[in-house]
Image 1 (cartoon, each protein chain N blue to C red):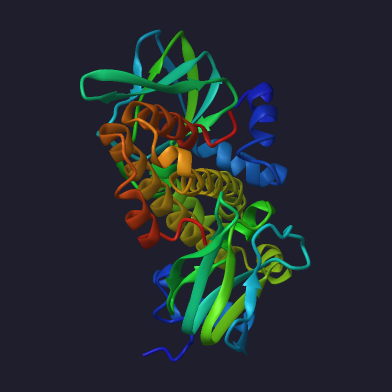
Image 2 (cartoon, rainbow over the protein chains, first blue to last red):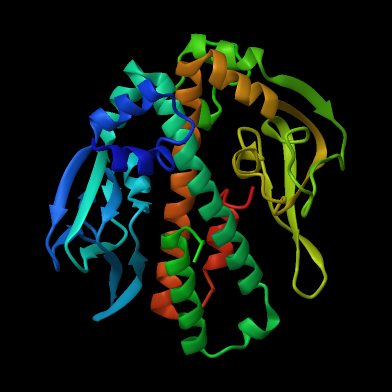
Length: 178
Length: 170
């Protein structure tokens, strides 16, 4: 792990870890390079990894009844895939490299290994991830319930509602911080 | 057979007896009267007032304000439910009011005890945090499915029903 990446990760996934704990985590990460147009993962296919985008640009999208709904761009420094890291399952979107990109990933089995053998590392990592998950659940669920209870929204045209729900889906994907 | 009051709580189903006992020792069990408010919508979360509650007996109403100025119960949760989990993690203002619907017995974990668990019991903290993450992931998948249906059909007819079944705003 080069020093630059180390510094970046210490400010995100490894926040709050000691040097030794961060090194344990970095030892479990796998590096991958993507060419422009290459898919990182595909909607509906089994996924079990969290990815950290070191450089480049990724785009998340979804095919809805024959058309592509772009959920948003993933800038460097963001992580994604944490849902499948915790609970292996089908990916909820397709993520494609818009340009040459470099990612680091952690798989579900490595997380379980950390939890059993180095619980202090797993606890710190999970603390950082659950904060992000909690913010996503709170903001999306609060926005959703406010919207379906809104009288104007109740009488809006289906197309307007679809637009709002599409935005909320992007919001859920992005963590609600856009 | 464990007699621990946390045995049978879905969030802790992967905990062994020793871990359940350790967790139970740092939680406080209390009885509450009808109408007692655990958490009030809009209240700031601070390190002093943040707790996670496990409902052991009785029912708790989850209510929130409406855009028209009204206030209504979104759902009623039953024993085994975990309340206040998100506030323990993100320190944002509370998104709903949680109050007793009749007499309630609940166990609570203070933020101080939660943080102490990190410092002194890393294996339990990792297991606890993993269980919390699993619950949040279930909520996210549920929200994702609701929104996907709504994008496809353009209406929210099933959202209320599915939302009520989820634990997403508690």
